[in-house]
Length: 402
Image 1 (tube, rainbow, N blue to C red):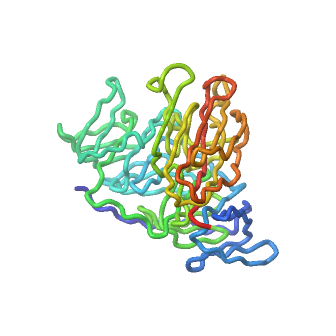
Image 2: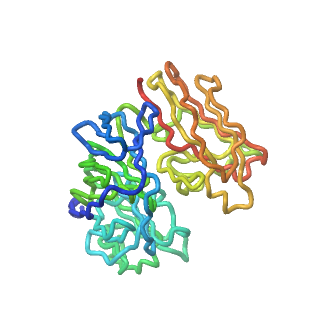
Image 3: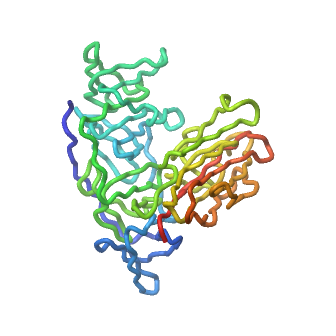
């Protein structure tokens, strides 16, 4: 076994209150701008521009949205790292040291991440690399995926170095070192003892792209401080974020729940010929969820015609969601056209009408789920068959109680 996860301390300079607008979203469907924000025990205290203060229980907060923040100057991005807690960090791979990788991340600077904290990493520029989630391994050995000439060429063993200066693995055929350019990606075998869930779980959606998970330590209108797998106290200015998402027993993300039934049918042919099955937190082609220029970290990618049903067992009171067609179709010859429908116990509760690619995201009206046993989301063909029908249902949240 490699060394246990070590913890590094990284701190960014605290910034003054950002020029970006900070908005608090709660399970009640409320969106309230916050001129000031601070964490006090189990509450967030939000201050209005008029000096008023409102104490909001933390377990009712869905997210802190940051609108109009700044995207830091990009660095030449050549790696996407997925951590064992679900974090995904993209940046420039730097020279590594044994059992630890180093990368430069826009806005965050240099990060040192123990290899034991890594689930998988995909190497190469964004347009050419594989989704690291497809590389994750349940095996007892690490895997290095080499680039051609033979597809599927792999080395199994214990990864000892991952850096711009090369990748090293104690493989089944002996120690092997490779140049980074020759590696498609790596998958790291899980530790015998898995990472324990964060006590005060938050997820930071970086404005430049990427996700950081951790324990909430402090929050104000200028910055958030979290404990991560690689830092005891990482301070991130809020204006470098798109949003801060909270976890609570009061709500659940629909995409995190397994559907009871999935029906998918292409415009021509049978279900066995369906090319784009649904995906969690990605479009059907594995890209980030972006609609009308707005990026979302949580959601479901669907392709017409798809019909997914979840068993609710009367546990929830409302559904909140945003729908649209992925902006990726803007690079295609067709924009796509679909119709979104929501059914509750077989009864239609929402019909979007025709939705086309390139349009802004549509926020659904709250769907009443009180007493409901089944929820069905349907994406139907529009007026162009199923061409480019790459639909997404984003920030789909099931609220418990009221």
